[in-house]
Image 1 (cartoon, rainbow, N blue to C red):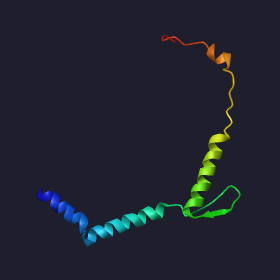
Image 2 (cartoon, helix red, strand yellow):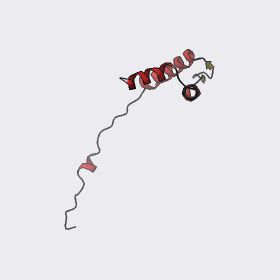
Image 3 (cartoon, rainbow, N blue to C red):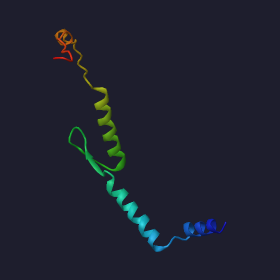
Image 4 (cartoon, rainbow, N blue to C red):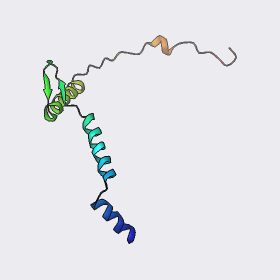
Length: 87
């Protein structure tokens, strides 16, 4: 019971080191965000909404317009001579 009270107190009234830690983590998280990007027409998109739209549009383009080329198996490969253990 005492440990819970101490944890509640610590969570409610954070010390200076904890505030610094969370501020540093927030700073690192914000540094990883993409703030601007160029779209397919080389127009710069800025802001989280526009960057998300440009990235989503690019991903859709990659997924939808794939060309799959299929060919028959070369029968000569299947009919190759196999070596025995003695050879």
